[in-house]
Amino acid sequence: MRGDDERLRDILEAIEAIERHLSLGEERFRGDELLQVWALHHLQLIGEAAAGLSEAAQSELSEVPWAAVVGMRKILVHEYFGMDLDRVWATVERDLPELKQVLSRHLED
Image 1 (cartoon, rainbow, N blue to C red):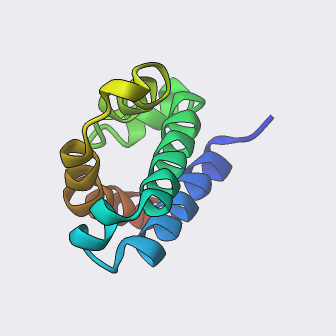
Image 2: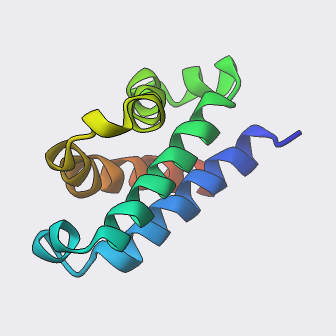
């Protein structure tokens, strides 16, 4: 079973994978189905890792909206055809950098 620190590192690795390929910009993302699938896959990994965190880890990192992180995964997996690329891109642009910063800082301590 994976521990909290391993799950947090899994989240960071997924964020970095998304960053590597989506640094090409929104227009490229919207026009490339493979980039969309890449991003969705890694967002699902983030949600899965977050869902496995202990309550103690979630409490210690209370500034992270864990319910929203896990909820995004549920939407991507269970409501795939209702997926909104605007929402995905906003998550990539706005939310992931903040999440990366919080988790990186936490793991450095």
